[in-house]
Amino acid sequence: MAENTYRPATLLVHQATDRDPATGASTVPIYQASTYHHDAGQPGEYDYARSGNPSRQQVEEAIALLEGGTHGFAYASGMAAIGSALALLKTGDHLIAPNDLYGGSWRYLSTILPERGVSTSFVDITDPQQIEDVITPQTRAIFLETPSNPLFNITDIRTVAQLAKDHGLITLLDNTFMTPLLQRPLELGIDVVIHSGTKFLGGHSDLMAGLVTTADPAVAKRLKQFQNAFGAVLSPFDSFLLSRGIKTLKLRLEAAQTSAHTLAQRLQAHPNIARVWYPGLTDFTSRRLHFSQASGAGAVLSFELKHQAKVAPLLKAVKLPIIAPSLGGVETILTHCWSMSHAAIPADTKLRLGIHDTLLRLSVGIEDVDDLWDDLERAL
Ligand SMILES: *Cc1c(COP(=O)(O)O)cnc(C)c1O
Image 1 (cartoon, rainbow, N blue to C red):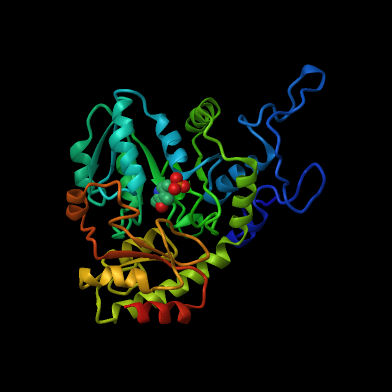
Image 2: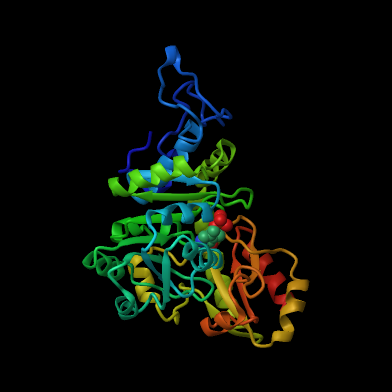
């Protein structure tokens, strides 16, 4: 059992449970069981697997420990986590969210939530005045994502958390891009932190998972109630994979981040590239703000090609990156934002947000950076 006074690398490896309490096995086994014996008719610690089981409990306690929360919840995907966290809102409530939200979240907030009677104002969330302007007596919550993607807009977490407190609003932050290793929103005043565990936490592009954590007991009680009632829970097997992935997060993310920095600089100097977005670059606009709330730039960058005609040949020529809509794996992932990660967003909205079809997102993996560069340079 890791104490929360340990440093991140130790917490990541040991998590909240570092061996099977029942047998002493070096990992918590995959408790592939749907229900648990009630001795003499009395429920024990576990009752029915949807309500809780040792495999899922391990990752739920891990995310709470890593983010500085008191309660953690694991779901079948990042979207299941977001949908379940937003079940804190009721019919008639109003939500404020970034206009450059992750595509899947945008789809949920703009199509499903309105049918449940929850409306959302999408604003430039980096501007506190725009948030203030849309607050009504029905507003209950602010949803944040920083850095946003693919254009890396940075929101001042402390400022928005304070603004929300002043108005009695709950704040939820999708911390998928940074992970608790680089950014710890609860310490900056955020109420609920959400992750797609599919990305850096899992880290191997071999599972889907979502996580939520909070240090607010009333919020935790509602999340627990909804998780049990709605049932979009993480399976024991995927819980095992996620816990295993989390153990190496520091090694993976730091290696990938170093390579991302190198590739961002080399791309920036390439004649076919119009622009590169990466918080680690010295000329990145919100660099100071980002590093006031995060300890690293992460392992994802975006770049824009000068000529649209070069996009298809590039996607055809690169050999190492998997070309796909995801990020955070040990392998490098190249995404054509227009047609993949942001496909759910209408064309005119994408253009208004500055997402052009010449824009590519690179989630840098842990391959040798010179092999990655040789491959990219050849394809460019
Ligand atoms: C991938 C992603 C999600 C959704 O997670 P899934 O596991 O794909 O459901 C949410 N937010 C961000 C920032 C993501 O990158």
